Image 1 (spheres, rainbow, N blue to C red):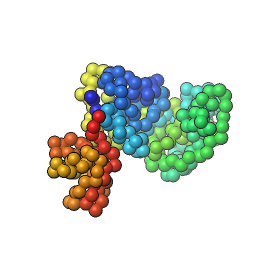
Image 2 (image 1 turned 90 degrees about the vertical axis):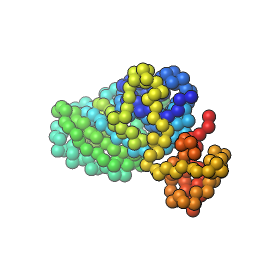
Image 3 (image 1 turned 135 degrees about the vertical axis):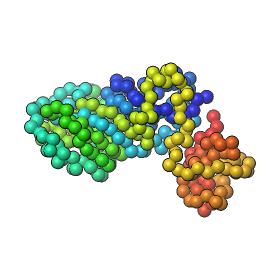
Image 4 (image 1 turned 120 degrees about the vertical axis):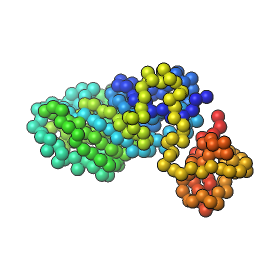
Length: 288
């Protein structure tokens, strides 16, 4: 069965789950998951994990993400992007310099109130279900980290393009909304393209049409995601047997730390933690 990682350049108006469903049909594999949701209006990097590789999704979701976003000042909407209903409009008198001056307020570790139009659950109900019925509930601010935030260009009197490198859980729509509030004119997100997620970039992304044409040939090996860790190749039958049975493995020469573990035939077995000459599996990638 197909197994591996494929980076999709998600098209506009598709949900992340739509993409997964399409790939299930193309690849004839039920086990398909993505490494970080993109809103339907967003495009760009969507890491998708297939087959045994779905076991790596939990690692991918935690990584940094980079976006290029359109910021429209002078417009406030209920969804915090241009697809929503307008709540406020004005003609903003905001210069490029004024925008640049407020960006440092939104860098580093900050608190962000999640938007009502999100999949977060409060009281067992998704916020967007409440919002679609005209409701609103109090949301507690959540800690996020904005590692980098810069103005790339001004494309119109009230249109700007930002680049943002951020932590998991960051809502770029809310960031645009909050920047508009800080400038006193309101704002919302006018476009969004993810340029990096889980360490993968747009240069590695393919279209759904590419997958339709080439299929599983486009899948990258699962261990591609863990290349930052050193590789350890087991040398004895006993080591590999213990590893495949979920038991600690003696590896006296292995320094402490996280390692990629390979079998005697070179197949990627697991991600393991080495300590005091003993390997303990963190996540296995062998088997059905």
